Image (cartoon, rainbow, N blue to C red; front, side, top):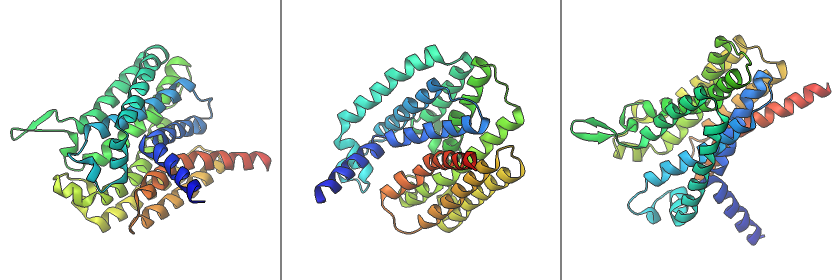
Length: 298
């Protein structure tokens, strides 16, 4: 039994800390967009989402290497830098996959959109701005971390599929529907991002990073999360053309996500954040498919 547990944890560590799991979540978020639009998914867009997520997350982690990763309080940091060559190999493979996908299978509009999104994501960690004779990245701008992450995810998992549908498949999606989908996804991603910042509250204060929890305080930050989810629910119920099964499925996952965020206020390990909270992105799609299947049987 102990051996099975060790094997399970080893596999889980690999999936979570190599960023394969978050890449699967990105694919799930892309599939949600196709599902809600009731159009067939584009396998090349989904592949691009998968490999670009791995590459970007791994690149960010390698760039933010601490002086002594072996003594880091975070399991994720210790695992990544104890498997340094593996992470570099996975990152290089993902980049090699992104290049042909981007060059041959995405329209010029999609290419420009992804270049812009990639530059925003890289600019978060790379110090390219000068303030008071000191080099800073976008992360040093007060309050921007949350909105930058939510924007990158919304553009990648909602806007990219829609642009590709319109340019390559000539399927017209109204501006109102596009804006609504982007807004809802933005609110959802922002809500599940805040608990990670709350977890890193002390560290962010040391590095003078003005995240939402640093500016609002821990208690108000949790309330802010619920406010974001409530905003999503309002948009879902008042401005939606989705089927009843989709509305019920998304409402259920919103309620579960709100509960998980509330529970994250207690002392939790890293698996709680990287598996359960990030996993809500995958759960959304699975619940949508389950409810659609049940509705088809009724």
